Amino acid sequence: MEKFLKIHPDDNVAVCITGAASGDEFGDVTALAHIPPGHKMALCDIKTGESVIKYGAPIGTAFADIKKGAWVHSHNLKTSLCGETEYSFSPCEGEKTEAVKNLYFYGYERSGGGVGIRNEIWIIPTVGCVNDTARIIAEKANTLYADSCDGVFAVRHPYGCSQLGGDHRATQEALAALCRHPNTAGVLILSLGCENNNLDSFLPVLGEYDSSRIKTLVTQQADDEIEEALALIGEIAAIAQSDERTGLPLSRLTIGMKCGGSDGFSGITANPLCGRIADIVCSCGGRVILSEVPEMFGAETILMSRAVSGDVFEKSVDMINGYKQYFIRHSQQIYENPSPGNKEGGITTLEEKSLGCIQKGGRAAVTDVLEMYEHCKTNGLSLLYGPGNDIVSTTNLTAAGANLILFTTGRGTPLGAQAPTVKISTNSALAKKKPHWIDYDAGAILDGKSFDTAAEELLEIILNIASGTRRAKNELNGFRETAIFKDGVIL
Image 1 (cartoon, rainbow, N blue to C red):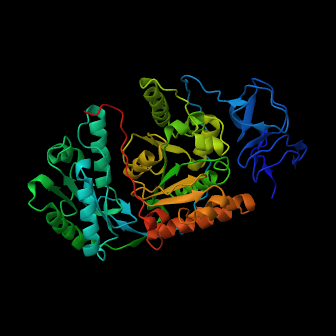
Image 2 (image 1 turned 90 degrees about the horizontal axis):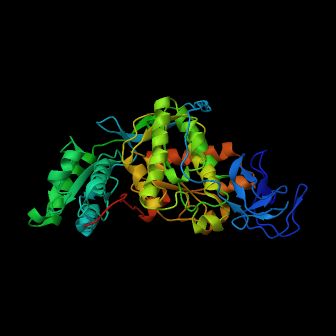
Image 3 (image 1 turned 135 degrees about the horizontal axis):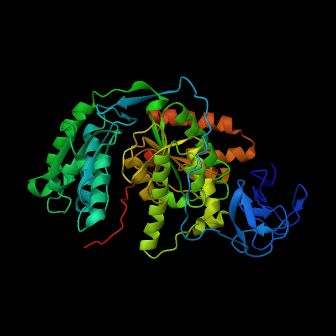
């Protein structure tokens, strides 16, 4: 294995694969210092003020002279991003991937036209005050109805009361979206009774619903809320028991894309591998959702150029500028990124992180831009407004209707969402150390495994998880988290 990898012909840095010592050679370049795995080495002299190029694009500016063979990182490279940006629509037709035929999974067709890959019953509190009540109900319900569904789960969160304005509405929209998620056979909406988000307030946001599959209970009005809840879940379970999986084409699947704890290999292995999956799914008429807006900064024009129309382009501009305004409202630096863990893993600037991050979206055309908690209804690649924070972002993707989430990681995390969360390691060392967290090792690509082979293997795992013949590691571990975006006052 080569110690270094030059990603793009135009790059003036190479990524260190295994860790290099001073004196190690790569072509006509000799390393001048120890360079950790995932970090960058200069392939030529780079003068102060010149751009550092990776992925064939600038990832920042040198603020000191960098000698050929030197380690390139925070001590000599800084972001070139500042302020807000004006955008113009310069359409560039997305690359088309030939549709792969005869790709099927076995899922549940729902009455509203959606498709689920699980037949679970969720208990969704309208307020955090009944979180533990929901947990106890779920534990008892699983002993009673385990044979009737794919499990009963409490969707716990801290909000639903003492919130004002947009935060109150966001909580309602998030919970309503989760109530409608196609991976559920049914839902018990559990209310305390005196919260701001009481049923009289929440149900109009939810809209019309099937009362045989969505039940409600106000715990303050119940004599024994546990027993009454179990009886209602029993009614849902009786219906869920008759639900059956049927063979469905890949076009019916919705996949969310997420990365967390990125390292210098994320943009080389796991993220472009997910991009291959995105292209396959989109070519078959399926849906892929890409979020993490602040991790598009510095690479957003690539996505904007692939918008299918001027309208979609304008929506993408509003998404990017809207998130920048969110930073400004809170008097924060727009480009306060990457994280300490990212930097330790070899990522220096936000441009570098973003250019690697957006590769999860592949090369397909951008067909829609979604507001936070808006359900994805358009085939192809959709961009979703929202943060990069792992728990908030995976909740956002789940609420948008993702059947499952592909989650790439270079540092490792056990986190899971309510939707199956498939962990893909960027390096093999992580996969070997944390096999109980990682579903697929994309680090094998560094050892010579082709992207085509890796995509075939990962796609098989996805179809098996979608068909219920395999569980994601987060499901096996019982790791399911929910976090709702907050942007205002709590009383």
